[in-house]
Image (cartoon, rainbow, N blue to C red; front, side, top):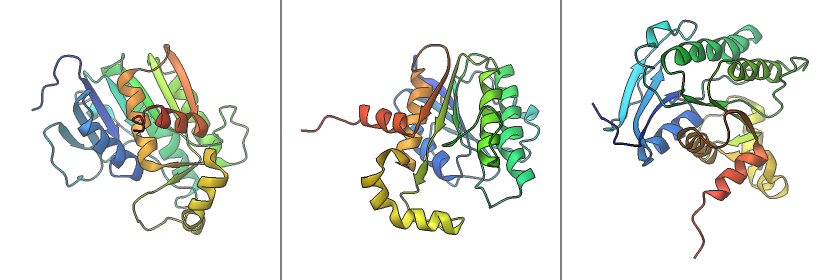
Length: 235
């Protein structure tokens, strides 16, 4: 078992088999501030690394069995989610709200001082009044996390997330967005973000505990600013 050196963080990532979560895990494994990265997912990742601990968990409606795994964690990056249109409305709410709330409950009980980075989405509506299910459910999840008692909650609201690597797009809309991404990046830079850049930002703020205690929301513009601020100086 890898034992973090003094000052290094223990980070847990949920959703590492997905696009953003996968980048987050790979970045965390190379991050000098991360001494141990624990992936919690339904299936094996198929990778090996001295920093990595894999935990398979099938039922995110009940995260109680994860209590021991989540003890002693310094931060969490939560990327579990579903695409609108790919699942029913009921399943979208279950994945977006119920799974998030349940995981946060158990994490806070085991590691109350952990920082929490949450992958929300552009247009998330904390008032619960939006007619768009995705916006309404993401808003409900955000509210629950902000009330969960964590010292630091970082909410990321990206607009279009560019996949970077080729993949089978889940819907026609995503196929179209991928095709026109080069144009969007030039004309509307604050409406797009690369998946790997988003993942790095989520990990960086979680392990560095950026900002004052409480909740902080990063809109797409803010996420891009975080990424640019961490770019190495040009020679």
